[in-house]
Length: 130
Image (cartoon, rainbow, N blue to C red; front, side, top):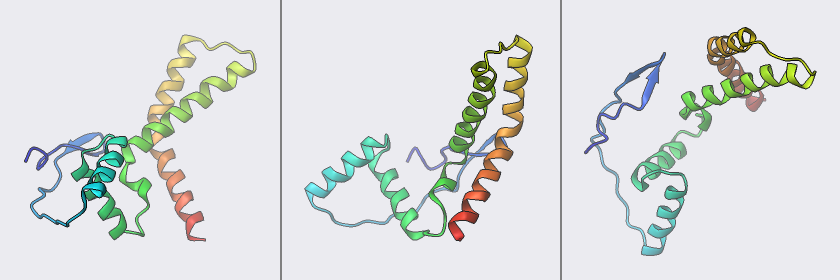
């Protein structure tokens, strides 16, 4: 299969290969159920087999927050949020940004988005436990 060694995991900016998937789990479903699963998986932009795998593992790991499955995407979303806050704040006060200020904002976001993401996750996990 083509996805046995897919490089979809990232560790400190480096791609690494995931463990080879060798086991199969199967079940019987109706044609209507198959259509329903296909519709949902397609809506999420995933192949049905990969989508089913994620759903099964999420159900088997109820104590693992779903957000931890997508650390790279979350980090980039936090980066966009930081960027917008830092650029829009002076603009809303009528100030102009120089090219140097703009570049400093970009460098600052790149440098801090990972740590900020970890802090936000830790805060969220602590509030969910309470």
